[in-house]
Image (cartoon, rainbow, N blue to C red; front, side):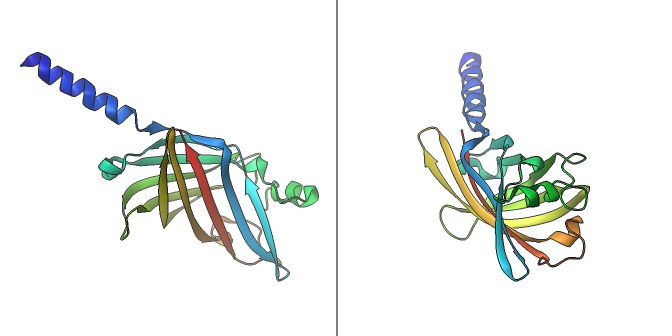
Length: 176
């Protein structure tokens, strides 16, 4: 009996650890969109890292703790990108990571849709955030897609200028 119980514990621990994933930079994207002088500006970040524990059968145990490298901001305009790395925008030298951490993950109203609730950490600010996301399974892990909007001024990004206060973020993350 003791052997069976120990075997079940080992199998349960193994199946939970099998759900330990890491975001993969190659093939993933973290994009943003904002209006400047009325024109749309898009950009992206790379340098994804962190951990994701996800198993749709045990969604209440899900943990998402991922970040991107703030210095990798890329809008296809090197002068603008250099400006965005400075203290009045992302202050990439002082705050090198932009981090997203779940407080909870729950099932959404439709199959394959989930709800992220947690915190976004940008510069020296931490704000609550909630958004839906979808998950697709492949042979080596999961493909997460979601998006959210933030008010950039709540994070002291950009000060008063010609850019919109609202910034949209699109996540397309592969985790293995």
